[in-house]
Amino acid sequence: MKNIPLQHFNISDFQEDLINWYQEEKRDLPWRTDQDPYKIWVSEIMLQQTKVDTVIPYFHRFISNFPTVEALAAADQQDVLKAWEGLGYYSRARNLQNAVREVVATYDGVVPDNPEELGSLKGIGPYTKGAILSIAYDKPEPAVDGNVMRVFSRLFYIEDDIALPKTRKLFEAYVREVIDQDDPSSFNQAVMELGAIICTPKSPACMLCPVQSHCQAYAEGVEETLPVKKKAKKQRKVPYVALLIRTPQEEYVIEKRPSDGLLADLFQFPMVPISEIGYDHIESWFYQEYGITLNVKNHAGKLKHVFSHLIWELEIYHAEAEITAIEDQRLKLVAKEDVAKYPFPVSHQKMMKYMG
DNA sequence: AAAACGGGGAC
DNA sequence: GTCCCAGTTTT
Image 1 (cartoon, chains in turn yellow, purple, brown):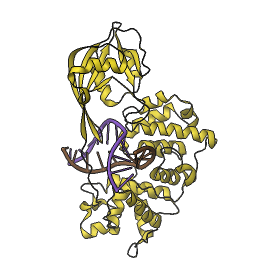
Image 2 (cartoon, rainbow, N blue to C red):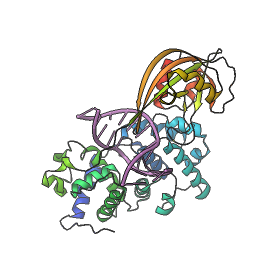
Image 3 (cartoon, rainbow, N blue to C red):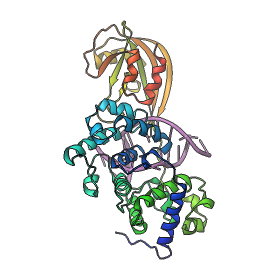
Image 4 (cartoon, helix red, strand yellow):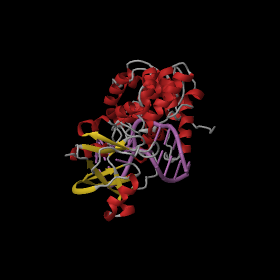
């Protein structure tokens, strides 16, 4: 491991200043009511790339629906995805349920308390592993997320690109040097809380910071220039015609997406990749793909939906199909009032407003 | 190392 | 519009 230069850094004073501030200022969050490893786990998965305020209502609903590892292990995937609907990164939900089933099958329903077994579970990477070990089991393990990298890059004036995988390992080495061995749970949560409330990406509140006196970036007046992060490339646009297909008996055609890739296992209204076939061949493409004869009617509206890596441009059309049953396993005929029982991505939830 | 993988809120 | 959020998996 890399040698960490800390000769001008008072570790115990830093721990005391940080943790005292945390005990005083920490928010009341629903996953801080006890140390149940399952609830800590669920919260940490939901919090990946997702703000605390967004997670709170989902966490309440999820724990109410699936209060234990046994309950989640026994649930239908459809119901789990429905509880995750709108939260994004849906592989988190599928991986969580897979991992919980492994915990029930292999570990007698007890969430592992060691890095090897915990880290081998689906969806538990280096951050989540450290978070569960420290918060649920009081183990002095680093839990390096975006907050930790920002706070530590400023504390120690580290200019490494935090977008690079190897940089996270560097920060883990720093955390191992300065983590409080007696209360690693409070230490890790305090750094993240500090990053969320004080040491923010823009305009950090250094005048309110409990560890200002320990901060090298503040001393040099460069806190706003850290951390260094390569910027993401912009998304490519993908145009589709999205179809609200109605049958004579007032049912709609919905489709289950494939079990891998984007929005895996969620439902949607059928979409025609317009850049590949053009507007003149929608009905023939649809017949070739699904074996259903379509009568495309009027334009209903348009929707732009931005993902992290691409942009959907949806032109919404009404259509009719003279069918009473469907062969294709991907498709379902569903009454209008039943559509919302299935898990849909937000883009297609918005499409429901255009149903007749 | 880079890309895939959602959605929302702050500015 | 930009940034990025209590990241992980796949390529």
